[in-house]
Length: 406
Image (tube, rainbow, N blue to C red):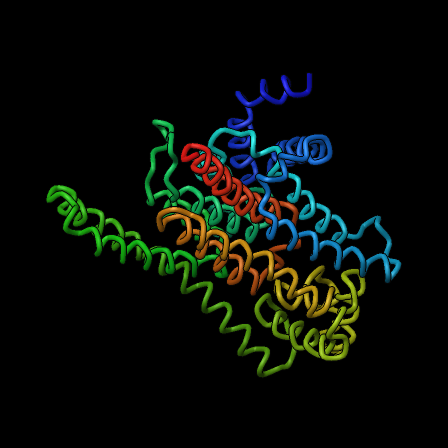
C-alpha cells in the first residue's frame, strides 16, 4: 500500500516542489509545510526502504551530520535550553536535508522543479513590489526584512538561469531571468547581494564571446537596443548604488572620529573586533549561540556595549559561527559547501550547472560576510534546497545513464 501511494504521488510531487520554491522567495509559510512534508516522507523511506539512500550524496549528508552533531552536541554540553534556542532549530533544519533527497529521488526532473519554481518566484516578487509601502523612498522588504528579500531573490535568479529540460511556455529557458531578479535586489538596497551579479555578468560575457560566431546576424543587431536600455537603466541604478555606498562611507568616517557606532556598517566593525577577541580566547568550541552577543557586548568599549547588545547576531557568517561553535564548527560548516562544489564540478554535465553553483557559493560567502545568512529559516531552506535538488538531479542522471548502458 505504501509503495502504491508513493508511486501515485509522483504526479504532483514536482509541481508541489516548484510551488514550495516559488513561495519560499516571498516568505509564504506554505513553503515550510511543503518541505516538512517531503522531509517526513524522506525519514519514512530512510528507515523503511534502505535502497533509497543511494540517491543521497554520501559525502554531502555526512558533512551535514558532522556539523549538526557538533553544533547540537555543544548545546547539550553547555546545558543550553531548547526553548528559544535559534541555533538548535537551525541545526535541525539542516539535519532534515539529510532525508530530503530520499523523497526527492521519486520526483521526475527535480532540477526542473527548482528552475521553474525559481522563475515563478521572480515573477511573484516583481508583482508584489508595487504593493510594498517602502517602494518609494525606501528599501523594499515585502513586509519582512530587506536583506532576506534580496538574498532569496538572488538565489532564485541563479537557479532560474539554468536550463530546464521541459520548460513551461510562460517560463522559457533564458539567462536573462537572473538579471530580472536584480530589480528586487537593487530596490532592497542590500549591498552585499550585488557582487554576484558582476560575477555572473562576467561569466555570460565570456560565453557570448565564445559563441559570437554561432549567433545569427539578426540577434547581433538586437544587442544594440538591449545595450541602449541597459545604459538608460544605469542612471537610476547608479544613483541607488552611490547612495548606499555614501551612507556606508559616512558611517565609517563618523566611527573613526568619535569611536561610537551608530549605523549598520560601523557597528559591524565594532562587533567583529569584539568577536575576534572572543575567538582568540575560545578557538575550539566558541562561547555558544545563546551567550554570543552578551559576550561580544562585554568585549567592546562601554560606549558601544548597549548598541551591540541590541543585535541578535554578528552579521557575518564566519564570525558568527566561529564565536558560537568555534573554529571546528566553522570548518565543519564550510565542508558542506566544499563537498557540494566538488560533487558538482566532478559529476555535472556541461558548464552551466557548475558555473551557477560557483556563483551560488560566492553569493553565500559575500552576502554572509555582512549578514547572518544561516541564521534565518528562510535563507537556510533556500540554500540547502538549492544544493540538495541539484545533487539529487545529478545522482539520478548518473543512475539512469548507468542503467541505460547496462
